[in-house]
Image (cartoon, rainbow, N blue to C red):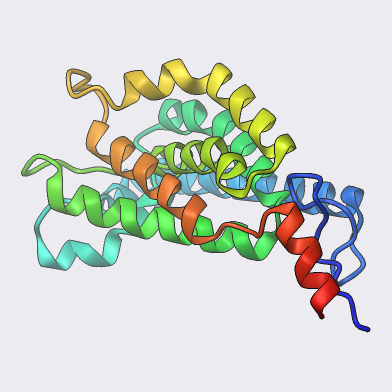
Length: 217
């Protein structure tokens, strides 16, 4: 009988996968991915500064049809090094934890959040504004990680979600407050909702259900 080793009931999908990856392999790969991602953001901002902020135009101006092509690039563009710095640490940590659950699922979750958040910004942001930055993805990953453990009924995932909520919950609430006009609270809110939606769309079977599926196969 063939058995798919796609993860165990450990909560974050660690243990051996179908490719024989160990927990250490997953952690190293997730770390390299997120360090590379954050490094790319800094590189793009360096290019932006060196070219007189030529990349700022890749931000999203709402309800302008031609701006729809910018909904993905906008997640990688920032308005100054301070903007990149404020997003780097939470993206690094939240992305690393999310990627531990599987790179393909992480890619799908991130893609959903980026696209849905970009469309939301395009639809509801104030007229004549220009929105860019990785914070929509950060808020989305926060929502995904906080909810997914409960959705999948995985104890470790629940604990991780509660820890993340304890560390970043206050900042998240501040970031989605409509009174905070210094940031795109619309983008933050849509990103958060998109992450919660991703937790349901890309949920894995609960540990008991997964064991039953294996026994049947």
